[in-house]
Length: 382
Ligand SMILES: *Cc1c(COP(=O)(O)O)cnc(C)c1O
Image 1 (tube, rainbow, N blue to C red):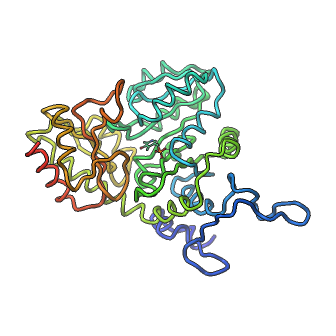
Image 2 (spheres, rainbow, N blue to C red):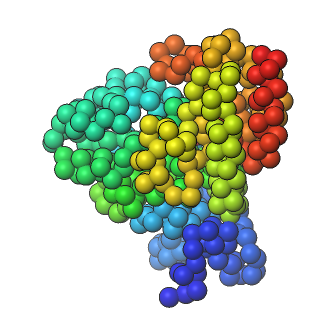
Image 3 (cartoon, rainbow, N blue to C red):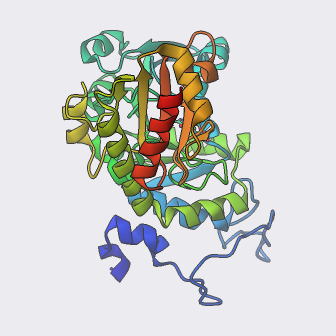
């Protein structure tokens, strides 16, 4: 056992598993741009690398670190979070039944409804907070996959991973969890019984809004995982070498970034709860949030950097506030060091379950008092 095996996850992340380049003693890895690798004289590939769809040494360290942080047996990087999620669903067969949340990342919900269903999957969108309804919706022998997102965009409801894992496994289904918002700092779905964890690495894992990528981590290298790996290899939705390198660099500061975002989110939530212009603060870290007890049990070290505000004077006020803020950036996405604000209903368009008076806030790592003052002044003039 080497010294690194005893390091806490925080140290593992900061030191990227203690990896040193064996040739140069460099403390950070090179970016491998090679698309192809030399065969041995007898035509074997003993290096383990053959062709860079999807065999790339630049992935190895980031994938190994993700395995370590999530407590998984294997990890794979993808071209985007959507590509990672898509690989999990496309490992199913037409006719298979899937349960997905009613409130979830909009892009994936739309892909399921507009691509996966015409392709042949049977998808039911369920309120994942209602375990009785969920149990009734499971079709033993036919339900192959339950997909969760927790906390779920953009109302930040929490799903009970351990209880739903038991339900899924009782019916012979795989449980996959989109843990983009929780990050491995705050929750580790595999340890609660999930089979696969998905991340949009674009968000907290990279954390600097300068790359797009996705990741999957598995509890076991089983048949399902082999199928997903085949999808990446043959489907080719691979991450570029430079993006993989940026991701690893970003993950070195994952812990302090996520902790700062959590502190800011809690400060913003507490400040605006009961505010004259705010109808509701949606944040699982508030003691009177409906899912607070479950969140406190399932998450450690914080409740995430994402929250939403519903404004008393409705959609017009929400759009006006997003137009007037100066420190918050009016942009989509989340999980970067800079705070972002977005009127989600207009971003998602017709059919969205998101209330029109809602502003989604992604807290970065700026000073909480500046973030609060900027929102206060936008609310006063909005
Ligand atoms: C952004 C996001 C995705 C999609 O990831 P991309 O990297 O944009 O493809 C999926 N789930 C959640 C929760 C997200 O925030």
